[in-house]
Length: 244
Image (cartoon, rainbow, N blue to C red; front, side, top):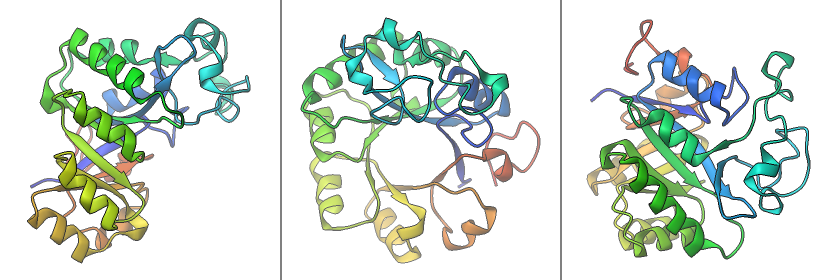
């Protein structure tokens, strides 16, 4: 089975992460999957942003959930990366789903919550996915936060779930079973062939992050997918559908 190359936060090595221009670059590159991060705003909207603050990736500062969506859209989320990307607004999950709905591309949605807003966020995520009629086969929901994944499972979103973890430990194994996950997304630096084989034998896919050097694949044989900031380094031909 061909290795799937997942564009990490779009194409984060060449474009400002999690922005429209970064996602569009991944689409143009012909990737079959993209990974993004989502979290809630003050007015309960879901936006595409990795950090819980906007300090690193915008010209603003403060927590994402201290601002409404309209307020967040006044900031520039592209200029920090390079001048030619200035005036990139933050993207809402709704905008992203509308963009990919007619396309043949999958979306790994990493849910980032560091408060107790699990029920609220998961409910809004379910609403957005249902509203845009995204097929189950095109969505993978993941999170480092176990409480978040338990809420996703409890709420019966009916989309595949992946346990996201820095390393494969006892808690990760237990959660995989508890929430009927289909995959385990692991840090490539802390993952070995024995773990990969054991997970796959148990029926789980193994997706590894973040792989930016093709030489790393020697230690990741048989993984199902890798996340990369530079997915073009792993494509065999122009416009390749992510096979290596």
